[in-house]
Image (tube, rainbow, N blue to C red; front, top):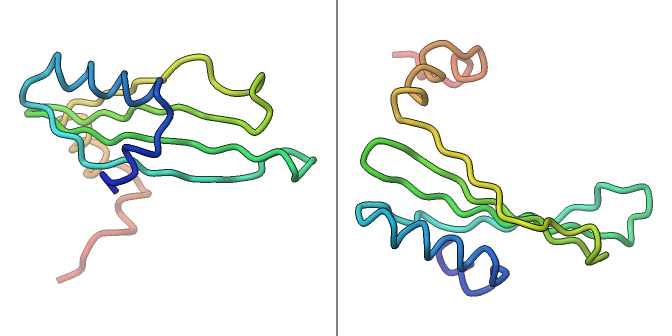
Length: 104
């Protein structure tokens, strides 16, 4: 997944570099690229680039959407962070994760 970094738009690469530079212990896990056609006109394609980053006490995603109609592309990178204690809360309490539990 990290190999996708070079294919990502410059705006996302720059945000990832800045994020990692500001947080010396952070690590880029990879960049996921998803293409989809969310509009009635299926000739319009959207590509979502999501960088996954982990640090000592939190995880983060940096996301940028690019559209085949440039005027519909994102104007900035969206950054979402969650502390690991919050992630743990979801694992323990979410019905979505309960279905994934391994039964011993």
